[in-house]
Image (cartoon, rainbow, N blue to C red; front, top):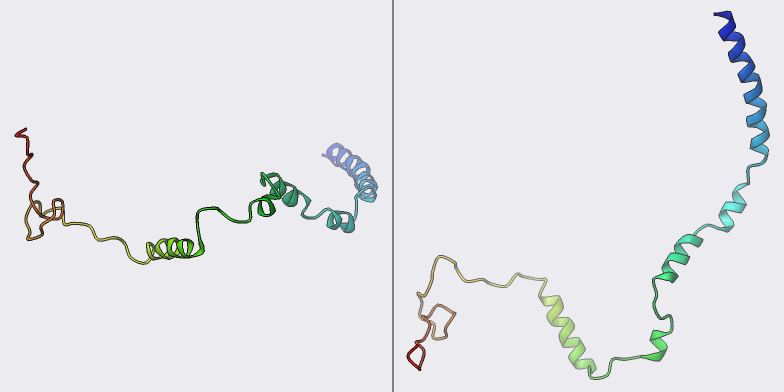
Length: 112
């Protein structure tokens, strides 16, 4: 039992000064702060294909402002309410005139 205590004491006596010596080699916080965020900036920059794309192509030809506003209005309105779907239990019954909206399909004209 005393042999284990002596062995542990020797290891502790060697380990504590070694840890204190290694603590002196450790860098301080300003060194970490100086490089803070470099990896995020480098990965963000790596994801950009053409950094000068906005200056080379300032607009999309063929799409005027009114069409773009209308497209965005339709896009935003699509999230307000889901589209109405037909009742799956009512097939071919209704007073509507167009095929696919409750009316029966018209017969083919060529007799097929």
